[in-house]
Length: 110
Image 1 (cartoon, rainbow, N blue to C red):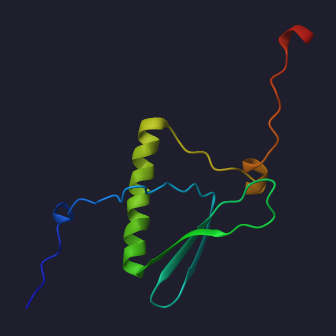
Image 2: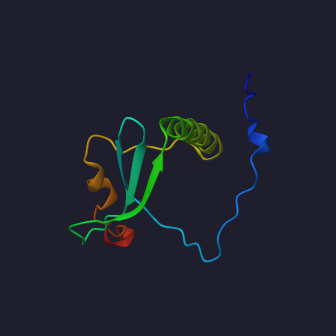
């Protein structure tokens, strides 16, 4: 007996629970076992010394690879519409995320 592949168009719509609040995350830690990929989402703010896991997503390796593919496709679409996403250079990521903002120079004082 052969199985026919599922058509993504046959996936039913997603129901969003009432009161579901979005969570901002600027850190993701990824780990794995032989059968699972685990992604822990956290948030680190400048004054905090520690961070806690806000959400943990556990996926099969196949599901994680499909997510990886879908993210790549969506990032390509985003960059086509809004321009390239620039990744911080040689400095540590935290330096770019939490750098001190300086007010603009006053042109009259020059």
